[in-house]
Length: 54
Image (cartoon, rainbow, N blue to C red; front, top):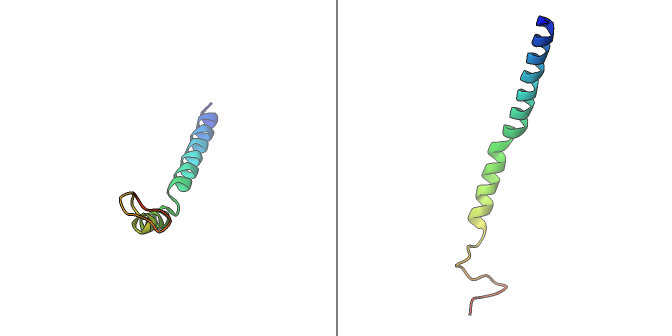
């Protein structure tokens, strides 16, 4: 019985590590790229080259 509980605990820890790794791996680079794209994108108040507000 103890062996089954230890195995379940180990599997749960591995699952938590996999989820944590996929959620936060490379996040800093992705957020930096997202912030740069948001700063370069025109806002709704600014007219663009393709169309202007009339």
